[in-house]
Amino acid sequence: MRALFVCLLLSSCLLQNGYAQFYHQVGVGVFAGTGKMPTGATNNSDPTYAVYGAFYFPRINAFESKMLAFSASAPITAGILANNEGSSSSIGFGVDVPLMLDLSIGAGSSDKNESTVGGFIGAGFGFTHANQKYTYSAPGWTDVERHKGTSYGPVVHTGFRYAHYKWDLTIRLFYKKGLEAQKFQTFGIAGSTTF
Image (cartoon, rainbow, N blue to C red):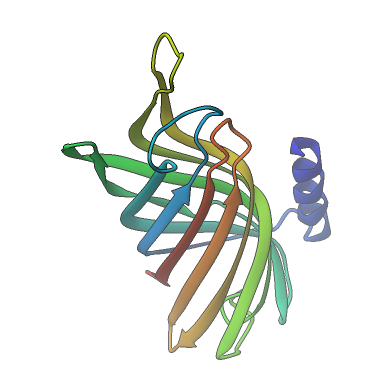
């Protein structure tokens, strides 16, 4: 996967003769995940997390034309989460950091594009951490198992862009399938604009 990512990025850069354009946006976002309990655990519900916070969307166009662009991006969401476990509650921190390869079409794909609307689609690999612990127990276990809200796996995302004068407004949706023991499935949405 890593070798494919590097090859695609280098190939795109060569097509553009080493010329790359950097773009970034800021906004707000939320992501939430639901996982699975360990086999045999008797807890009442599966582990979950929900994080609300700031969104930063940097990307580098390795190749761009008047209609479309190929880019590498790292759309980051970081914020706070509310944790309720048993009779206690606390506030924690969460972050979602993917590395993506994207195809953008229409508005916001590059400075050359003059469309009013556009969109993008992409795939990559992501890491999510929610500063939250989950405790499991079961009859016959000599001790409890403790897991953190950490997830990693393949990510897909898509979005819609609307160009209004010099501002590009973006809505992004994503889904990540966790490969870790708890198999978190994470969904997110964010809104952002250029600055």
